Image (cartoon, rainbow, N blue to C red):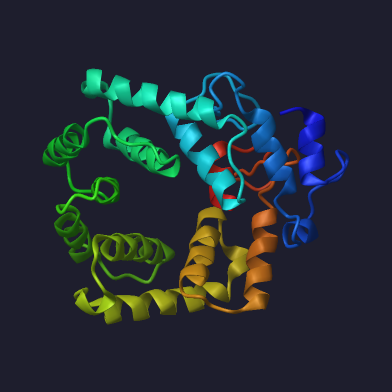
Length: 276
């Protein structure tokens, strides 16, 4: 896509500077859209980890780039190139499994689902995940990958992870609570079937309420946790919403990308994803 086309799409003059007010207005994402579009590789339709330019597109960067655009109700500029990249990557997985990790598998499965692409061998991928779990502790990515495969084993793995959750008064606990609850619900559990759910939820809500009174003292990832909790719990608090958005805007770089460091000159594909 040309620069002129992108500018027309976003309807933001090239000289406009991102501000806190711009972030909390309906057009808050325009600079970010432009940055993501300009950084896409014309050959593969992917991104590098640095959103400022693309040298070697990776599955990791493609995952964050595609999902960021999806949050903005947009698609990659070169969707067919992206599909070809994913199918080629899947073929490499079947031929050289020893070179891959469960993280790679999770990114691949997520993107194949996003583009409605079928798997070549569901059994091969599931066996890889099960073998990987034998080598290390079960993780969120193991469970989520099994869910993406519609594997009946996902329920047991998700419940095992939930039962290992330790209550503590921290936003890290709130993040883990949200992650594991997502797994259980996606696996087919209702909150009523989740052991100790009420106690865990009440603690998460208490931590959220306490942290909400100190938004200006929170870092990038803590802000992300607050925002996610607000969204999932449908918390209607316009003052808090504006405070969080204004604080997130402080991490926005002049080119529209986001960093997790205040005052950084340029951001990265993953931090831009989390910010959006």
